[in-house]
Amino acid sequence: MDGMHDLGGKQGFGPVRHRPNAPAFHATWEVRVNSLYSHAVRLGIFNMDEYRHAIERMDARHYLSASYYERTLTSLATLLVEKGVLSQDALERCAQGRFPLAAPSAQGRSNVAARRSHAVGDRVRVREDYVAGHVRMPGYIRGKTGLVVAISPAYPYPDAHAHGVQAADEPTYDVQFRSDHLWPESADAALVHVGVFESYLEPA
Amino acid sequence: MSDLDARLQVIAPVERRVDAVQALMDEQGLKASEAVEELGHAALHQWLPINGGRVVAKAWTDAAFKARLMDNGIQAVAELGIGMPLHHRHLVVLENTSAVHNVICCTLCSCSAIRVIGLPPDWYKELDFRARIVRESRTVLREMGLDLPAEVELRVWDTTADTRYMVLPERPGHTASWSEEQLAAMVTQDAMIGVARL
Image (cartoon, rainbow over all chains, first blue to last red; front, side, top):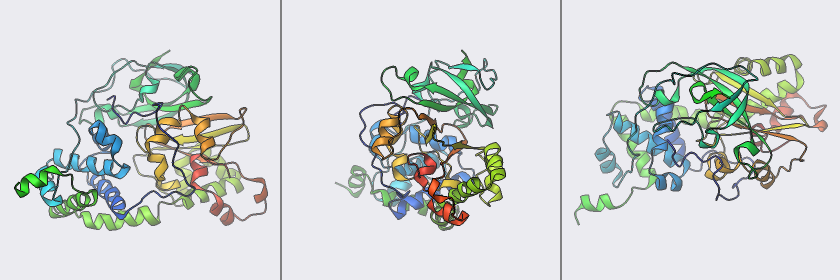
């Protein structure tokens, strides 16, 4: 989906608030929620693709204003409710207040029929696909052409795996894009590499 | 206004929401509180940058290990007792040189090589880094204290699938006589993400 999470190349943000040796966590509750969602994945209540997509499905304003671990919390709670483990009503009674959850999911999709394998050195183009559900194609590469520099072993295909749709695992290709092809005259000089699932690609 | 109405007006503080999830999961017999103990301990005490530091130090001092690391990252870090989660099927080590500089990000969320370089730092997961590092790469690095000469090739790696990446920083010249342990301790998480050079 073309949600707020798809941030690569979006403008209007400010300086990175960086310090050396910066912490991962700012509060104990953050460590707890990190453990809770990991435990839920470990138990098989949901998988990592469902987890990521439930974050993406948060209301746009909630997504942008929430802290990182509040997004984790919202995804965890949403999936626990959707999978029938808990109810939103019980959560709100227990928390003594509103517990906003993510919006419902669209349908997933299976592997693209026209997909084909590629080799290191191939020029490839990212398909002009618009996906309502989970997709790990950042918008900034849609329709762009790049060079395959490496190939990774097959992984569960996110567009299906986040939605309980049957699909074959797919290899991903590290595709190298020139920043001036991604954002002509509007980017610092760099080679941007993205791990692209086979279904997102076509020969260039 | 009834208690119910009052309750529905205000979003519960985040910590109370976490408490609610944990308590209700426990009530369902899911052993959430035990998991909080176990996984919290791992996150705070086990999955730390020093793991990556040891990998880097060994790669700097043992050419055969470095070759194995570049060929199969997962197997090589396993030699040092570092286990990756099963779903991370590939670890790619990106070597920084005087001519090439690599930096890693996850524009879509926060993916990183947690078991090797530790849980990602706060700024890595924040909107500003995620949005800007792919497009304003050199500017962002400069703001973070790393001013790369124009002739250095900059490679940005967006972690969008289950492959994980880590940077093998260039070894500083003044460390020629250092022990592996001393080397490991001086490797920072920032250097293994690629926002700093050592």
